[in-house]
Length: 200
Image (cartoon, rainbow, N blue to C red; front, side, top):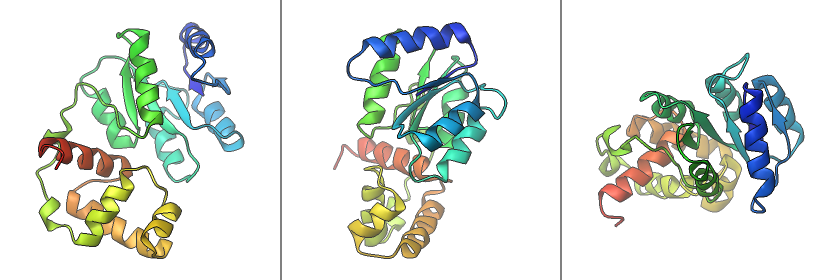
């Protein structure tokens, strides 16, 4: 699903995704509220959103959807502000694509996010944190790896053989130890750490 406040951008993006057989465009919206209402009804897996969507805005929209287990993975399609990719990541987006890049860049970002990757150009996520992996318990390391696959709390519960309340408890401890605020940052930290250490 696509959401952009600029009707020309929305129309151009719609045409691009409708022509690409790898995607199935379910809906478009010019507002955050319209996007939210639609994804609550339709099984949207990937959403491309304008950071400045009226009236909620991209950050608030991501925050609201973060609490929904069936929420789509969101890509912010925005201006080349040096801070915007970092803000999008902090809010919990799965990726960022700059408006100034070729359209293929947006397509590739969508495909990578659909495969479970985090895509944030211009950010060296290794610089966001020091490396506290050593402080994690074995169970927390296993949970971090399972989390990196994009599993929901329910799926983590099933995979690890523990209750969803225990999952929440471990996730809270994990976030504290990694000094992150949410799942997206924990996953980004996992991949940055793995890349930084040569994908051990």
